[in-house]
Image (cartoon, rainbow, N blue to C red; front, side):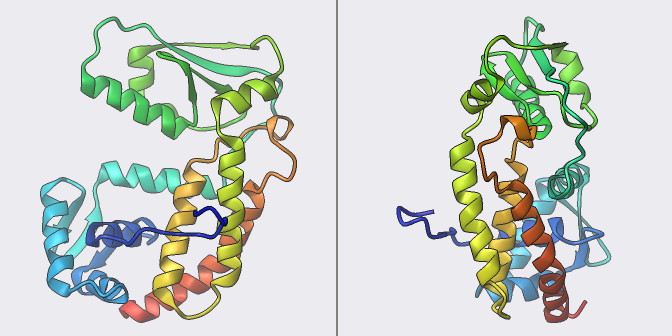
Length: 248
């Protein structure tokens, strides 16, 4: 997003094209020829897409069987988080907060990275190093890595919870970009599939970063639900056009 508030999106690499396509496809498996056709929308050569597929298989991002490429378990978990971000499961908030404090003394760099990734997926924020928290209004499973490294608590922090939430998350920044993405979805009702593809992928990435806080802790005119609604109202049409393009 530039200084005028307009949407600017970086060019997609062949890997990003493949990954975004499969993350948005159910089930997340497509033949190579279909992924090549998506690459054509962006002027990406067939050889470049096929090279990306080979490298993604070698890296463990994809598995290939009989010419069909599908996401591996790690990326299936990301797709599940992406799907959940479109319709987060919440429960009434009673003012309590989830708190997780790192209590394992020796952790490798990979352990730290795994915990940080898990906390981001759970939408917890780090108050200080090793102390993570959020309002207890979400319903979701916890990965084992959290219980392996942390002691979990519940409580009610002192002070104004809305002020604390604004300290933990850049709510104004998230809302500003959401407004721009909402407008971009409103404008992208043409058959310019490349442009619509990029906007759709950007919206899904942004929804993954929504902290999904209780309404009482959010600024006025919070655009989260509106952005989800706008996305859902345009996604079926876009997916239909994309499937026709790739011959699905």
